[in-house]
Figure 1 (cartoon, helix red, strand yellow):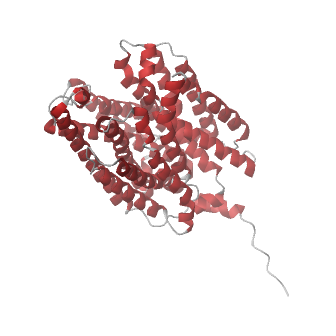
Figure 2 (cartoon, rainbow, N blue to C red; figure 1 turned 90 degrees about the vertical axis):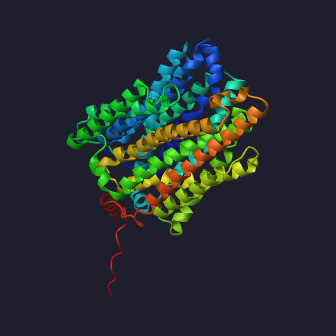
Amino acid sequence: MPAAMTDRQRLVGFTLCIATILLAVLDTNIVSAATVPIVGDLDPVHGIDKIPWLIAAYQLAATAALPLYGKLCDVLGAKQVFIGAVASFLAGSALCGMAGSMGWLIAARALQGVGGGGLMSVTMVVLRELKGPEEKAAGKGGSIGGIVAGAGMALGPWLGGTLADHADWRWIFYVNLPVGLAVLAAAVRVLKLPARTTRRAIDFPGAGLAAAFSTMLLLVTEWGGKDHAWSSPLIVGLLVATAAALVLFVGRQATAAEPVLPLGLFKVREIRYGFAIQGLVGAAMMGSMVYVMIYLQVVRGIAASSAGLHLVPMAIGMAAVGLLSERLAAAGWSQKTFVVSGTVSASAALALLATLSTDTSLWTVRAALLLMGIGFGQLVGQLIQLVQDTAPADQLGVATTGVRFFQTLGGALGAALFGTVLSRVYAAHGPGGMTSGIGRLTGPARRQALDAFVTSTDVVFWAATGVMLLAAVLATRLPSRREPRTADVNAAESTAPPPPAPLHR
């Protein structure tokens, strides 16, 4: 059993986690701002066709690795898995920066994604372990997610565009190395987390089935309705294979001695609803982020790098809620209150975005994004903390990564659903052709196309509003007050000072 960490060491540990989460958030969207210079350098002739794989490789690998990360945390301990995830991420980043071809870069990006899958999820386990027993019992610490996620969303597109325009696109990946190496060295030296002394089996077949299911599902959502028709043999075959992998995975989890996603977790009401709400939030959040950016660029003619700056109000809202959450909790806000308030606020923001027209004031867009940030800021940290507070102590890792897993899958399904809605509505109201051809139109045809496109995005935002309202309904099913885990209560009592001895006359 490692010696207890001092307050200074815990502060360093929290700083390491913040830096790691920021790296994770930045790398989910930093590459999208630099695809043009990357293709121009590595493969100006055929590289444009490989951009979808460049973007998807990271997400596919990160999602596929998530269930295994959770189990490894519970079996080996969070410190060892955290170090391994950071090391994999840094190796992938270095190889990305040295890439000499698009194929090399895509493969390196996948390796980076394997590590990136652990940067967010395993770091949240480490944060939980760094808390003192009294902080766990009091439910403190839900603010960090909103603050860091908000900062990352604002910085990612801007940093990627700046490095691509004024330096070299390779620095998008090299910039990770000094920060990541400092995190790695400090983690090895400072982190003293509980080690696992009892060896338990790892369900590698279950992890493989989870990876197969999530990868094929993401490919379906990436290709369906865009590169291939939904009725094409490829998409139909992938859908059948995805369903088969899901059935096999659930069967494996029901019979495995050490499942990567124990079905017993779904018997806990907070965890069951937490997973479902996180999936719905992921779907609505993906739709809102993507289609706000598309609206600004296609309809309002704003450059991609400048459009990213319109996310700053959303980042401010998330960070502000993160800073205020501890005070609100002290004032009596329960986790249920945060989740209900967050889903309702996000629903209102999405409904406001659903009223956009071709000449809506950009301040209306900024106000909606600020309100959305206030909503999402209440959800980012609180849902993870809710699940962690109610998960069995020996399943903390799989419960934490489960939240992230459902968010990612929800985001993928949301992107597919909203993309299909956009295409169908535009086809019904537009002048013909695909939405990608709007930029080549002129005169009345262009005006008709823009009006049809705005109508389409409004329908998408109304659909996202419906998804978020469903999340709000589920949030009302959460218990008003959670009971701390027995292990946390016992730990808090064991570290509390003894009561004063009675006075004798």
